[in-house]
Image (cartoon, rainbow, N blue to C red; front, side):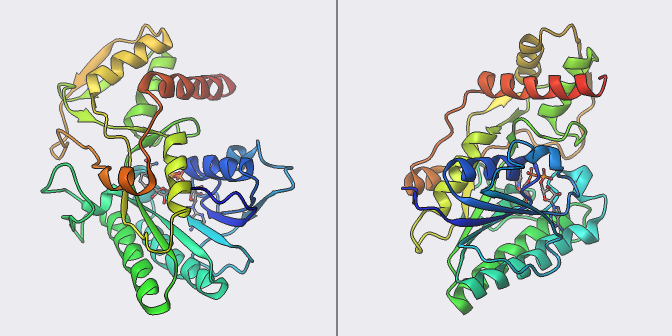
Length: 320
Ligand SMILES: NC(=O)c1ccc[n+]([C@@H]2O[C@H](COP(=O)([O-])OP(=O)(O)OC[C@H]3O[C@@H](n4cnc5c(N)ncnc54)[C@H](O)[C@@H]3O)[C@@H](O)[C@H]2O)c1
């Protein structure tokens, strides 16, 4: 399915968690990659394996400003992704999603380039439908503290489809569900990174609620594979397409696996569940499976082991 000819590819947000893995995959596939990032949540360190590679170029650039480069494809990933980060400067978050989309779509229009948007399951908001299929329009509070992210991403989707209708652009919209792996931020408040950091430091692992609430997490290499496959589809395939891992496990099981895999002596502590904590969050990936022949292959233990190894090295470097 993948076009093996060498292409020039722009990845915005390419110094972040997902973006840096995507850049590596594209360079491995033989493409020339330009990574544009303002290092808001990403770092040069995330791209260390690629710096010095003649097929990789790192640009410090904020996508809320226009960018003039010559490329064949654009992956638009720039945007802080965890609540702690995107609520820190909510106006900038909306600007990044909306102005960033306008600037990148403008670039794609000028170049007649294909463009993929990293959208999110958060466009479904507090869903009244489980699991969420792509036809569901969502239930988002437009004035709450999460709206800068959710509505920004929804508006970006609108812009992608309007550019397609108005300018015949080749667009792909991926709705990404929770993804984990090496280069996640250690302090972004997400459950996988929280538990791993607590286990490695020998601190108690804090579970909010009884631990029977279920979650689904996709390992980063599976997600990157899906993005590349989606970009490689024919013009008729636009998405939006859910991408994530539908395999569910309980938060209690996750904590136990992390304790076992780290060999930690951490105990498990329960705290009251937050009021809006969903019992279940799971993607429906039937469309991805039928359209791009994709489903995740990395098992939880395998993905956790790779993620733990990353955090172990990171924390050792920081003296824990
Ligand atoms: N990780 C997930 O589970 C997940 C889930 C759904 C959607 N997504 C989406 O995928 C994309 C990447 O997420 P991630 O988890 O890698 O997050 P991340 O924070 O690690 O990466 C985002 C990158 O964008 C950069 N960035 C932020 N604002 C920018 C701006 N104005 N100009 C240029 N660069 C900017 C950051 O510095 C960072 O490198 C985001 O768009 C996010 O919304 C991620």
